[in-house]
Length: 336
Image (cartoon, rainbow, N blue to C red):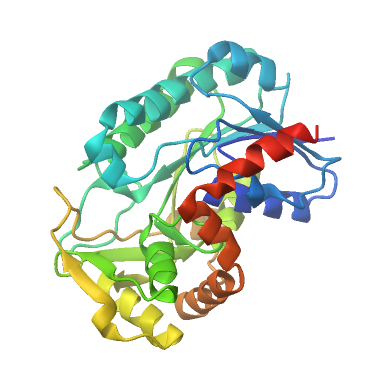
């Protein structure tokens, strides 16, 4: 039975990938490793086939724990595990350096020692820095110019991954994706925060003038792209993943309010984030040309689906916001 190790698999993007991978390959087994920090939620994995899925709670910076958790000869290790929120990196950058840089190096070493066939690092478009309004979208050839501690830690991890290929011949792959959205996203990020606040008629805090540009991709499209790279990507290669869906933040917020039938007066412009990147945009030509991947979910359709999910799963995000979702950990472990 082929085996994938997925770190950070209880988070937003990781859990969606785990579900898709298990659905697409009935012969696949996945070992999910997650420390279950604030953004890890075991409820995201409810319903996955237990005979083909194993969950291990562990810290990716703990080399001993990783050596115990990663099976010998696993077909792939996909590293989603990361501290990801820029605001949090401004307040406490040390955790980002530890998890994103040190943790990645530990995983590379363990994967090499355990004979893991492929190592796929999940990165971000933020490693490229910010674009001006008329600049072309980022390509894989663009230099790294991170603007925040989060982006810098991810850039450092990227370089460690590529160095492992150059130095040891390790079969690594690297993906850099634009902004994700979809179900089960922790409500500190723009779309779920705006959705959950609007549903409760609370103010929607928007940084600065709201005219920061982000390039959006539905998490299902991202998960499909990761599987495509994992199965056919060139070792040592970087693949940008995006859906060519640039939008002003303020326009996304207004669409959410319109779809929910809520007043625009809920929008509250607040002081901008320090060092806030103005625009991101990804050119996915390489993955399209080399591997034949294309995004399938138009932004308008994906956002409508996301809005519907948050309306129908209000207990999920309410439990996240009030912290009671963490009680599920003890219940889950107590049953095993």
